[in-house]
Length: 162
Image 1 (cartoon, rainbow, N blue to C red):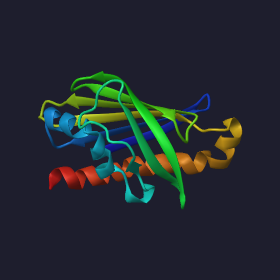
Image 2: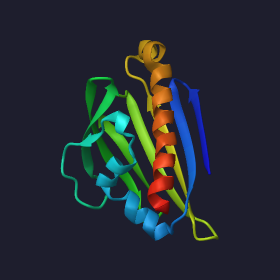
Image 3: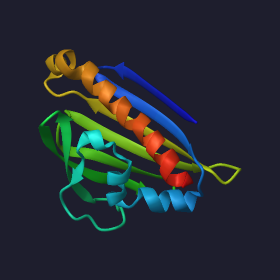
């Protein structure tokens, strides 16, 4: 089961995605706090590549660098920092440099009574170049972000149940 919504207020898009994972909180946390697992859950179409060598576990203050395909044949450098981290509850990555004017991504994990985990992603992002970026690329980018999270749902369903 997946719920996804996207709204825009004051020029900032907010995507909220909820997914129930058929694994324990400990297994979910162990998987999602390994930075290189991001490769496994990002759609191939994004040409996503981690360009530094992050340690095997996420921590507050961690910097991760990537290249990501923003358009066919056009890649962008992207640098994020883990700014908040509470063990087995949530962590936040924020763009320091990259394709957005702003990117703030919260990853929340909640253990359910049946032993499964509700994972909630809240992504706040703003297009570069103000209103012009929004007019010329806003629709394309918001659809691309929705595509990424819908793809992650499908990838995780296959990956975690096999």
